Each structure stands twice: as structure tokens, then as C-alpha cells.
Length: 445
Image (cartoon, rainbow, N blue to C red; front, top):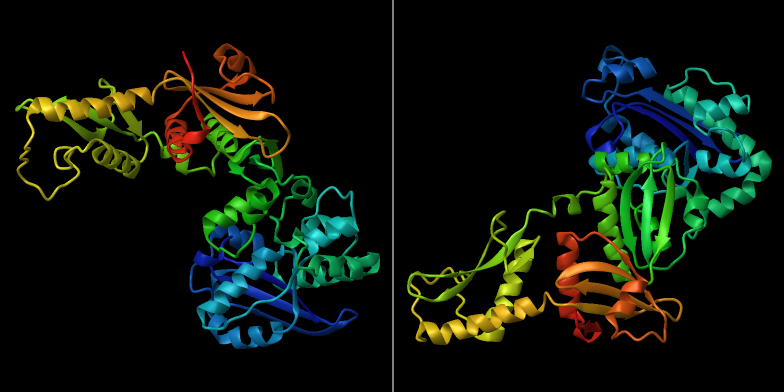
């Protein structure tokens, strides 16, 4: 019924590391049915710190079988059994990855004794295997060796079964039970307390430092999605191990969640947020007059001493925007450097005629820098979500009472919480305004 497993490895993520030792204890729920253990040649050097931790040296594994040689037997022993380990996703990801590497498909239901122990023995100071063995007087021989740790995990599972474990195990095995997919250091109640409303969530490390900020339309659903799947890459495995707690802030809409996320990433600079950190490499649309007197629009990298008519953090957004201007105002694509196939630009219009159309396009860009509010119905409650932009700059956001007069800008300011602007926000608000013009309310400055 159960396969209780422990492995030793050359590193912390399966994609780039090998297994140096594996132990499997077969258990029928009442007694041990069989055992298997062996050293494994990982085909890579074992790092010195791993040697000092496990005592497994390169010489010890030099003559050991390769994983491909034992894979059929491992696959046979695990087949049809519930996979049990302490911090189960680590061992499971390694074995599944290395079985797949030799062409053996395997998938199993999982039980994590670390999480089971939290439920069966609440209030212990720590739940790492060494700590919980000391707390529960579980004898451990050869700590950090596969056989010793697998035997200790077996005794722990038996103690859990005595403490109402049958009911716990059934609960953990239900499809809707999410605990076994959570990061090993994250208490389940941190996820259970999340509402399914829009908002921003924060992942904290063991010291309480924010290491990741994200936004969600439904907080609990989005957070859980981080932990599904079996990505064995170094980045993901490190990310999951670093998560010790979650906090959150609810927002009235998904858009306000996106804005708050961007503000918080710029404020906190979390180590695992990447995309918005590089978002300040900007592009702009510039206006200049060529030697023949024609006004021309062009996309270029943003320059310190020149202010663009409008700026973008993604080049493709700048191209999309300029193509829209070309279409709306019947501008020449080659003259705007969009049609690269035309080597010599030949306009049938005079400079005055063509420049008049360009000026209309420029006027529209300037009008977009005006003062306006984005008004949305809140996902919960009767208040109205409002985002205020003044003279082209993001001012802040907040809730307006249902009966408030949205046309009075001074009244709106009093309900807004100011936030710093950044280029990500500029582009976000511009894109949203283009997509939902009915939600944009023009205001007098």
C-alpha cells in the first residue's frame, strides 16, 4: 500500500543533479513488507558540502549501479503504491524526473509525513525529520543516509497512524486536499485564510522578508497555482523552499490589484520578481521634421534630454500604438519607419497637407495626457473603484461612495490614496483605457 522513500542527491533540484543513494520501505499499513536500498553512481562529482553532510564520497559511488540500471526495479516497487516521504515533493520530483529520463512513465498519489506530522502532533517547535525524531523519541541511525532516514520516516508514519492517522491520510489523499502540494515550510492555514477576491499577495522567507509579490483576480486560487506541477528546475525549487508565510491585501478590482502589485514590486524589490525590474528599458514615439519639411513620427529608445510624445516599456507596444495612429489618421507607414520595404519615400501630399494629419495624431497623444478617472464597479460591496490620472500622471486610487459625484475632481482627490508612478503603470493604464473607453471619465483639471 505504501512506499516510504528517502534519497540522497548531489544537489537540491532534479533537472541538474543526480541521485547518490535510494532506500524504499514497503509497508501495508500495519507492518513492513520489504526493503530496497542501494548507492547510486550519479555520474557527476558530489560537492564537498554534500559529502560532509551525508558521508557519501565519490569513491563510494564509483562502482555503484547507475540509476538507469536500477530504474526498472524502482519502478516496479513503486507501482500502485502511495508514495510517502518527509518533504515529499523533493523526493518525488527527483525519482519521477530520473525515471522519465530512462523512458519509464510513473505517477503516484503522495503523502508528506512533514505535513501529516503538523496535523497529528501540533505545537512542536520544528518539523524537520531530525527535529521531530528527537521530539517523538524516534531512533535514527545514519542520519542523512537514505536507509536511516527511510526507516525513521517509517516509524514516524506508524506513530501518525496511531494518532488518528487513518482519517488524516484519507483527508490528505482527497483531490481537494491541497496541503500536500504546498511548499514544505508553509503552514496550510496561510492558504486557507486567503479569500477568493482580487488583491495582492506577498511570499515571505524565514526572516519575514518579502521575496515575491503577485496580483490575483482570485487570491486563493492564484496562490495555489504557484505550487501545482512538478517543475524540477533549480529556480522553482529554490523559490518553493524559501516560502515560509503569506500575507495579502484585498483590492476592489483586478486592475487595482495590478497597480498595487507594480507599486509594491518597485518599493520592495523582491528577489524572486523579475519581469518588472527590467521594465524601465523604455521606448518612446518622437516627432521631428525632415529636410523636405515633412513632420515624421518615429520610435526610438528613450533619451535623457528629449521627452517623447508617449513612452512604452515594451517595443511591441510602441509599434502597435504607432500602427494605430497610422491607420486612424491615414499616415504613411514608411514615413513613420514602420514599412521597412520602402527604400525611397514618395508622398503625394504637400508638406502642409501631410503635416496637418500628423498634428492631429500628436494632438490625440497630448489629449491622452489629460486628467481623467477610470471608474469600475467593485467586485464586492456597493462602492465604486476609482483610479485618478492628472495631466497624464497617475495620482492614486481609492473607493468612491456609491452616491458620490464623480465629476468633482476635488471630491475625488479626497478619496484617493496617492501612489508613485512608474512606466509599467503608465502603459497599463493606457492599454486599459484603450480597451475599455466606456470606463474612462474625462475630468477638468
